[in-house]
Length: 395
Image 1 (cartoon, rainbow, N blue to C red):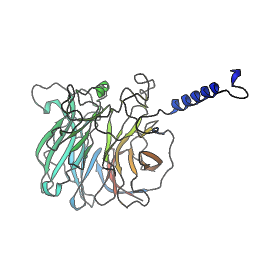
Image 2 (cartoon, rainbow, N blue to C red; image 1 turned 180 degrees about the vertical axis):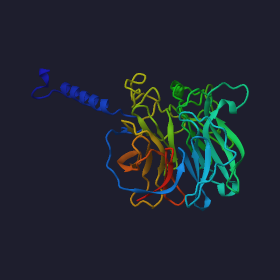
Image 3 (cartoon, rainbow, N blue to C red; image 1 turned 90 degrees about the horizontal axis):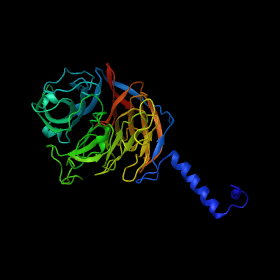
Image 4 (cartoon, rainbow, N blue to C red; image 1 turned 135 degrees about the vertical axis):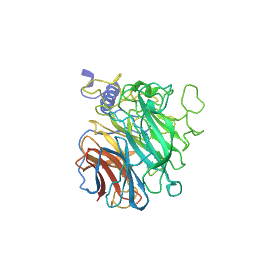
């Protein structure tokens, strides 16, 4: 070590450079797609926006979508679908809703109206489907399913319900169903799927739908340009893999799919899944086991696996997400909103390309389950509680 004193020779300079680089790498791993993922490890500044109530009395609402004339479709996790009128009146449960496995995190989850709803009245529902709903010859357990149906003219029932996708295989337990629906600009559907908790290693197995993002047509088929079509040992519906539990998904202003990952103890992520990319779970993660301890080798980066654009440590328990694309919120166009179950708030994230510029907290005071921008340009939230609310976010 005496050679490091006084005039520093070239070899010592090289050693110092390596040590400094190693220390920096130990704090935040470098990813292949971006210079480094942005880590949110302390509470960001608070932004004083407010909410107004649209409707209440919803029982653990999970997903919201929009109907003409200012109406809303809202799912309740226990298995009911309701229409909310502009004045806040909540309908009786609609008939024709599929049977769900309402256990743990499972139940009736996301809802989306088709881009051509004005002409076809088509609605999509994703939910945890019990094996008994499939029929004879199936094993027990449940799995995420996506169904298409027609909303009746009187708004009282779903008609012609057809299941267009089923996660395979069915798995026991009530964890990690994922279940966000996004319609792409080309009319295909993205569906986020979880690893079901007990099957996390299958997130790396392309022969299952466990821990995947899938892309299908509105008839449930794999588009021919999907990344794994025709590849032996891979399911053709798979779009991306290595996911834990994607409970937020939306199209970005760039027209691409953005998702967030509900991590374990720490390690919630924001990602931009692209065709065929591996997002690493459970091989790499910024989280740890509940109660402490590494997951797998405890590494955060590996060649061939994507780095998140942003990760939270500790976890915020992310659920629901939407970009602000209207001018309702001065200075916030293009910013991303992410719901936080754990802290009862929104995170508003400012971007420059794929780089985080700033992050703000918006206190809501209840578990935020879903975040969507309506056709009127306002942001709407669902609070996950026995007396849940549909809220409108105001600047």
